[in-house]
Image 1 (cartoon, one colour):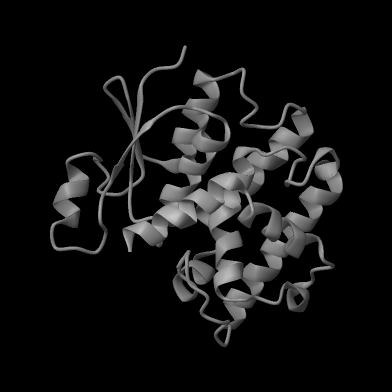
Image 2 (tube, rainbow, N blue to C red):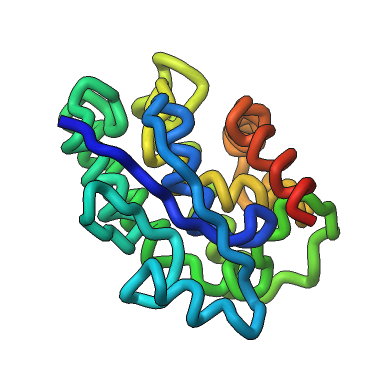
Length: 215
């Protein structure tokens, strides 16, 4: 049984973690109200703490319950909406989708630090450190493997859109922002095509338009 949802997020241009549950809820038609907090302002920490015990966004509010971790939000929504295919239906695909989502959740710190999300701008690729290059190569390998093994039913990692795609949406945006030549990192065209699929989603286009409006 679903409840009433409020999603508290940060700036759309820079808050990569906010994009993930927002995109999942929009793509699967899960209604929610939205509260946005401007990040990197003197009042930001106190404002976030009004909503989130961790002092971070996003946080989902559901009938008095607070859920303040992105993967926890996604798992909660999957339980609340079993009729919606947030995770792939196939057991093996679902297991790998959870693996790559968890890897995205906890990893790729070098890429996050050196190439922060700047959703609406095109900045060009900096001189990548060895660790950033390794992060990009690993992401390319994940995308190629998922598309090869599980992507036959559609254009996303596991065919149809799933929360695994939502988890990687900020990375797809980074590859566009920094004009990363994915061929340099082992791509055969699969990862670049997937990036373009993600960035052309109507929901992602809407996020970009709202990010521009916020600016």
